[in-house]
Length: 289
Length: 280
Image (cartoon, rainbow over all chains, first blue to last red; front, side, top):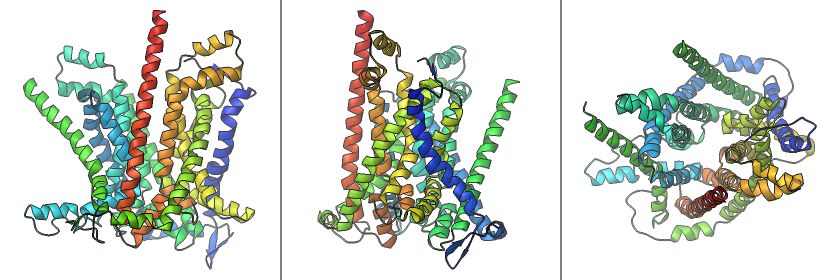
């Protein structure tokens, strides 16, 4: 389809952009700016005081507690990104190349599981993994002792929940870009005598890279902000950044602190994404040279 | 390694991974359905007996009904706004070319790259300030706005994908036949984009219906089903939540399969029309 050139005076262009611009400015850009401003204020007796100083920032950088939670959040998010990205590759490959007859139904089943209320699903995991839950009950039936699997309310359980809730993103993006690969390129590689495995690693995987990367970015960003899984499955024993931010707003009613921590988390996310983007660019330049 | 063996191994890994992931995806869902029929007050294995008792308890719970109503209102409004704005945005994304288009794209895509909780928290700060000025408190209205900002990017992407396959000679043909811009939009463009609009609306509805993070931050004291469940299980688990899960799974499943049927039928019709046009 050809793109139509439009000037900003054109009514059709105004109609299709202005409402969105207004809404996104009013409820996305301004709130972000507001958050930045709030981080320079203070609180006294649970009330906001417009102090315009760096006290909160000194507090945020000075406390070991915050560093530790931010570090844990970053590590959990990176581990979750690695797991979901690697797991998605064979699944997406099989859906596109092997199960083409069934891939439609499998996709629908996955979409349904994915779009079901995450709070309920996470609760379902608790019931499944509990010491007196389904898994341990079935294992006891097989002759294992009571409470053979004791992972609930630990960081492992949090990770299971995160991978569970985020894996669909990497599967869908990876499958999407694998479906667009020109089949002839793969066949050409076979004709040239490459084995299936070699073709997979040297033709399919590089061509699917955009989808794999998009999925990884999406998962990483979402994983930085998880709150449900550490709370419900992790039992709140090892809180992550989102819980800390929520607490500073709700329990401690310290808006400037919450705003500053929000900005820290956004910056961490942006830095990691920029670093990953830089690495990818360097590798691409090298592989071209 | 010999090629036959390699293929056999690859098959095991590939089919195995799909099977395993489907089991993985349905473990908590099956667990919830199972426990919804328990007789006991406690959610532990083995289940002593089956009963529909907890469905009755759930339906007698008034806060469940108000959460259901809030969820429905929120999802319907968010779907309406997000789909219309997403359609407009999709035109600007993939049909037009204009100055600062990249800026428009970045702005309307950015919420997708934000952790949802932060999106909610940042908006909550702003709404609290606004609410102070306007003398009203955050509630369903602010949750609707939050959902719209979060869901619009999804709608833009879905409808844009449908536009990629759009044959715009049809528009020119209508123009040659003397149709006005509105007529073209209403009678040619929109009907042809309908499958994309419809899937965007469905997706928007389900995203809003199941949303926890943004609602949790923005809805004030109004509760939707996800936040109702969350605050319930934070206090103590009860079999009414598995019963609620089972009740909400069924309509979602029906909806997803119905939308899929519709979309496939539209695709088939379009293929037929194209074949007929080529033959004629």
